[in-house]
Length: 178
Image (cartoon, rainbow, N blue to C red; front, side):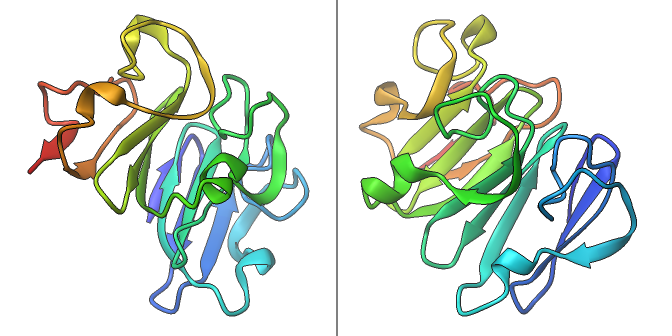
């Protein structure tokens, strides 16, 4: 289960995703902006690919598929979704920069204004708002698409974690390094 600001995302054991609550930015993934008081399955995920992990930001959602692709939907105010633009997505859409480079993502975590993704080989990618260096790239620049944190190239990350009002730090518990 993942929760955002007034909405809930549920991943079932068979890889299906249900959402309910506020849907102002399409964060429920049903192709509209209708609020829902009862969980509804996201139809786009029905089929051969199973969702293996979910994450929710304030008004956006991420889903990792068993083939390593990442889908995002909802608000894209600060480039949270990683598609290179600031257009809200009402349905799940695969992040092309991961897909085009055959980056197999195993985990994502969502914060208020940025997202962190873990590659199967232990590399860490971030996108979103770079305020106070939150993305870990040595600057405060926003990243419109996921970018590798190069300072962690010699490390193998095994976990990534963000939460509301927290920033990732290499020296704090945001990354577990092996």
